[in-house]
Image (cartoon, rainbow over all chains, first blue to last red; front, side):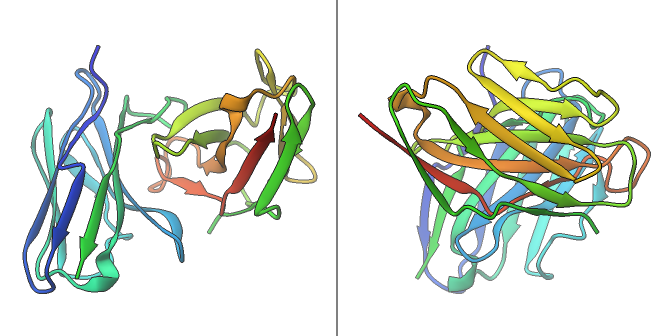
Length: 114
Length: 118
C-alpha cells in the first residue's frame, strides 16, 4: 500500500518564482494536512482539509501561500512569489477524520529559494 | 493555545541502555491526545506511540513506553534496549479533542536529537 506521495522531493528556485508542491494522500483518507519544518520555527501546521474542504488555514503565513484540494486524491500548496525565507521542508500528511486517528506523513519536499 | 515543550535539545545513550525523553505541555482541555514521532535522517515522520488523556494506563509499544502524568502535564518517552536504529529526532505532539476548530491540529515540541553510541 503506497503511503502519502509528495512531489517533487527537492525544489530549488529563484526568488520571485512560483512554486507548486503536490501531494497524493493515502487512498480512503479524508483529512489532509500541510506542515512546514524549519530550524527556527520547528514543525508548524499551515492548513488542513476535511473532505476536500479547508477547515483551518490560520497557519498560512501570508497571501503568497495558497492551497487547494480539488479532489480526494490530490492537493497542492502554491507559493507565489517565493522568497528566501520560504526555504524549508514541507510535509503533507493524511488521516481519517478525527483526532484519534494517526496522521501519516509523506517524505517531504525540501524547498530552497535563492 | 496549547504549547508543547521539550527541554532536552540533545540526548545520548549507549546501545542496549535505556533513555528517557521529556515533554511537557500546557492546555486547559481535559481530553486530548499525545503522540511521540520519530524523524530519522531520511526526514520521514514516523509515529512511535500515542496516549489518550482519558486513559490512565501508560501506553507501550514494544521497547517504547510513556510515563503520562496528567496533573503535571508531562508525557515522557522511555526507550529500552536502545538500538542504533533508534537514533533520530524525536518530537512530542499534542492534539485537541474532536469538535474543536483546531481538533485535528498537531502541535509539536521543538524536538530532541537522540544519539545512540555503539
